[in-house]
Length: 482
Image (cartoon, rainbow, N blue to C red; front, side):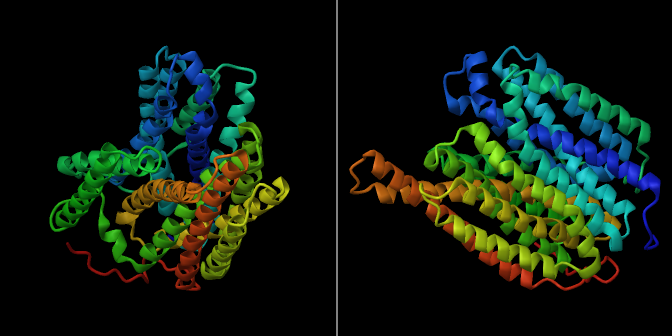
């Protein structure tokens, strides 16, 4: 493909996929502030039960995403889009009509199945249509969906729930999903080549306890430690190891479900390592910052969501210009600066206490988000650029899978550190209000400090990237063996 500007038809295809991706990712966080409403409406007594609205969505994503490498190689662009948006739309209908909690969970699982396909489909299509020299600018637009949609979800949900019942979240989403589905069917054209490959059933069976068990265990162990959660984590890790060994073995003669030869390309491995570290810091901080606002500063959930909104908007609005800079100067100046900003902002957060100004907290969190904006677009563009066309779908699926795993790990690790620090601080305390505040401060400060350690590792990883991006023609793969 010549290194020229993409054709207008290319932009139309990417625009449709980007809009659809924004819609499905927005849905992921809409329910975060609706849990109390669900408990009242559906007569649910336990918070741990109603949280399955979010947990079921997350688990389904973690299980389905590893299979998308196979799906995107086997299906045409239109078929994959129809599958993704069809599932999402059907799930939205089920959720809107649900009269019981199990039916609502079923709808969320169907929604998540479509969402899991959409993000890898968008990235794979960009790799197929856009020349490497211009991918940074286009990938910057992808960050809008990744960053802005989750950020505005809680705030938008809070505003809707002030005037309408929780079903309105799905009823209002339904016509948008239908419009996206119809627009895609009207405008999308098939790109790339389909492969007549067979599905490896044992690999699929390993993804369920592997990725599902790991994500469930790592998210539950910090909040509800028990033999069940520990067992889920152990089984998940064992099955993931078995899954990886099987994929490597399948490379010798058959098509693997998820082709791990993507890791043979050093830029892919370096970029993915930086993204993983940054995701751990990001998802952990996204959990810690609201706790700081609510537990130490006494803000309600809607105010907290609104205070986090500028950070998400900064990440999204900064992504396109950051992508264009990547095309001009390469990743290293951007990711090193972003990692340094991440380190500085998390160190400042580690000094937050109940006397810290809300506006200082808002400013530091916004700077933190700006640092992430300098990392994400360059890192995943740098990662995917060296891959040859036959590995595009597998690279996108691998990247999306590790986003899910590292996000869950970040939440579990930093909340676990926070709780451990609180327990240590409680020893010898009098249990009064002042002691409780001091304990909350100790937990949050320690957890933010651990986030800063990950950010410091990110600085080291960022400094090892080349100044210029690598393309498939110049990348040198190394053998991947069991």
